[in-house]
Image (tube, rainbow, N blue to C red; front, side):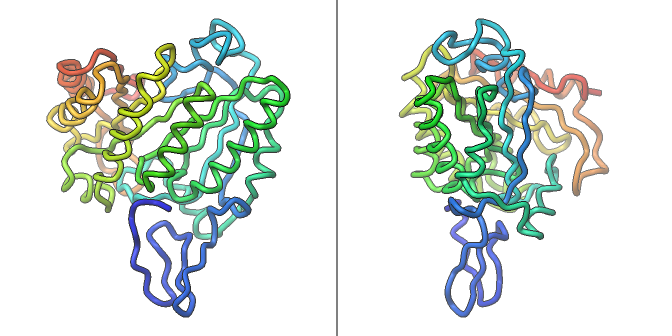
Length: 307
């Protein structure tokens, strides 16, 4: 399901905590179409989406095909789906409390029940967490059911993803196809460029995420000009993710298409890295300058956190 390809000993669980080896048989505890470990809520638009500066829900881009109005969709909501598992284990995790859901294996909801939460005021679904990469069959099934119902009612419904990208390629392809057709955006949080730094910070290689990003970019990016279907962000962790790392990511993005939007996010101390400061304004500006050597669309997010 994800790209970790865990080797799980008898009686043990995989990296994500959703697969267990029982007497030599792998049993999936969550992430199937009928068993999603998650929380959900209605998030009023416009919201603090990492793609806020070009997404239909926050700007009206793609109106009238993909947005209800030629500006921010005030009065509509995003169905925010917070998955309770992840395929990484980042020391700086900003949503570390997802681990409580993994440990309890609840709340649990089927894809059909989750899709049923899409009412006439919901104009987009965003899967995040944790990360959807560990529960892709559930997320994809939810999307398909919800989109079919929206089609019957001639309603706009965008499918969006905030993910580390560490999933099997076929799932990344299916996710991008749903976003392309619905007006949604696939948002990859690329944690680092150097593989060793990525492993040190997140416990897992970034090679699968980069492969998936390349695949989506090369296959889908040029197919929808009015709204970028793919974007990337990077958290500027002081002392670890500097302008060298950011320029590596930016060069990679530009090799696919220099128009790909790239957001640099200010760091706030969380989880195992509470002893670090927030990102400095100087660091953010240096990183933006490095990214702009290669890309045409670069933004700094969370500017209120800059020190």
